Image 1: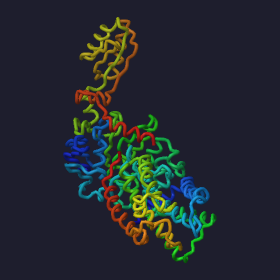
Image 2: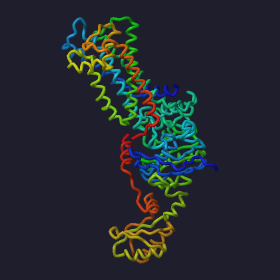
Image 3: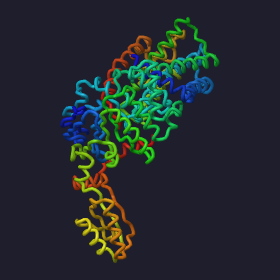
Image 4: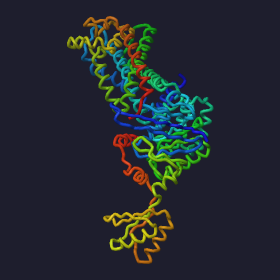
Length: 330
Length: 260
């Protein structure tokens, strides 16, 4: 398995005095035909990384190769073999889906007939044939993302970059997008995907790289990361008078120390046994007559990952957040 | 070049999909023709020649000067929506997107100028020179519009926000077109302003086009400055300067541009 994307020690700073270090020595490797997910909060450097690898931005220092081609020295050659889609890439909203695909096909230097054939094929593949002759602005969020993705697949790229492909989509749109992406991955494309959602990385990626403040803080498979974070947690709240007893039960059951939030009457404990722990806890509560007000298994969220890895919660940088809300209005 | 034409085609296709844009962008100059012809025309004294003959070249120049606004607006919008990013990730010539945009705006100018000329003919405009000279006059206007368009590229890519682009350009082009000989004689202005007005590229363009349409130099030349004596030559110099400055700057800006 050879490396398809290699980034070494990328640094990118912004501001008059280079005071904002968007990337601070970031390195990563994506093997050919695999999916790597770049996971991190807003402002952690995900988009900057994608922009550098997709030749839109030059790093201050460091090296990056895509399919063996240096992105700084030979950007035009890189552009021949990559596709880029996501929150920051876009399509022309006044034009129809068909118009857009033809335009991008022509810009990829397909013949007029070739562009038409490819547009038909892609519209069919992404279930957009019925909407082909409608302007993009009438599309739903999910349809728009699918068309955006289609536009990046015109020349069957070897390497695909998807920057937060499901941010802002409703659950159904997200599910559809995941199916489409999984289908693509089966086709053998190398994919680098950024996301804020651990669940998304879990669903799609072979390997996850967690970044914060412009550098890698952890990497591994979804399972290995979850082990590091501690896996699922059992969270429950019980009436105040049962608090101590309930805590005792779950601690014996999981063989670990529970935390509790006295104001919320809430107990939280690592539950490596998952659902069987949950069932057993309920059974024992029932036996002693405790009725939990609420009980649930919680999968580790990005916040939990961050808490476990860095000791602080994922903080969002003001600047980037406001930038996104502006884009969100389009 | 082929890539640029795809971009131009996209822009024209946009007009086809949203024809309102084309309709409103032609209504505005037509409205200006009618307003000036009938509202201000009666109050401005032009011995020996109808005001409308002097007005039409002025309005033509004003309209093409505003190409800077449409180009800036269009690119700022593409910037905001992330389209520029996508174009920059494609294996196309680096200048294709901006060249395509300026060519598209120039094409739009052709349409607008035709509609305006027809309106002018309806309200009494009659150029008195030969067909060749009239044609040369319109060619002059188109090239001036094209040069201004490149200034718009730099503005649009720099401000990266369509609302900012719009107000920034208006703040600059509006006085530029009025501080000229386009609508009223410069003789009425204070002496220092007369110099400004006469060196203004809009004035040299207006004087040059009037010349090509067969009119005596009028509304200018009071301060006897070099540009008012040689309007055509000076206009050519201005157009050359605009393009020599803004084409390289714009293309360089495009290569390194990042969204807000």
